[in-house]
Length: 330
Image (cartoon, rainbow, N blue to C red; front, side):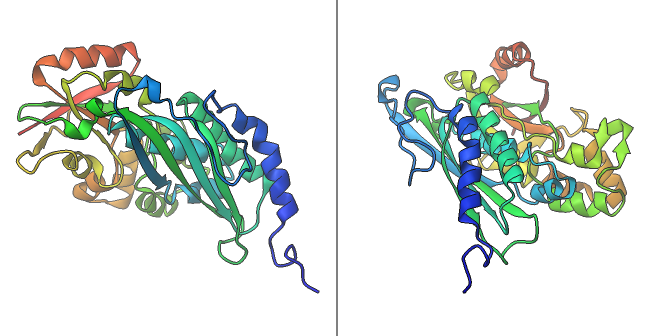
């Protein structure tokens, strides 16, 4: 006789693991949350009275091979924050703020402590972004993933006032690009970063200029810009926003522009964080590959009316954001 547990799926452990994280997840719930964790789906009361013409905005993403760094270091507390913040930023650039988030966690053999660390990170980010971690899927798939490895993805649903949708605003020649600084690689370029850095250093190698080890630096939390940028959404002099992910500054910013416009970037207008210089120099990576693979220290770009730049920069200063004027539209 062969049991499901002997085949590699431990339902009792999964149930215990979910029970263990319920208290943490419930800290993300708000008065509109109508379901409990463990139901077949999440139920949420839509706050329709808060909007004149509400539009639902959604996005799904993952954290790529940043997961490999978590596996190597056995540090899993930041990766959950990264997936939430990445998704928050993706809907923020459309003019939306988050309502709720759903996760997908799949692994070869469930390790309760690892799972708990990941979900705790998600919960922390959800609280910081006023977003409910409303539901998710935990899949144990023996023989599919490597030992002690897992995959992670997330889906976010938010809401925007229709009149505030960024996609409806035209950009113009002469608009200024304000680049808000990143906290590191965020969640993109890790395949290139791992190849270069792990061929030259151990994961726990300390580098003074980084202020920590290779592993710690690569696991820096993907920054959320919600609390700094969302208050600016209603200002019509904010013409567009881009989240700098895979493809870099040029490709991501081009996604929000009409074909008649192009981007003039002053690549010397900000100090590139040391981690990017380290990757470039150790791997002899061409400049164009660096610019296309990484954010290079710019995590989000505001495209603003050239006559109103001071309004936006003063706001960012008040929110303790560091930023640079990095270019213009031509």
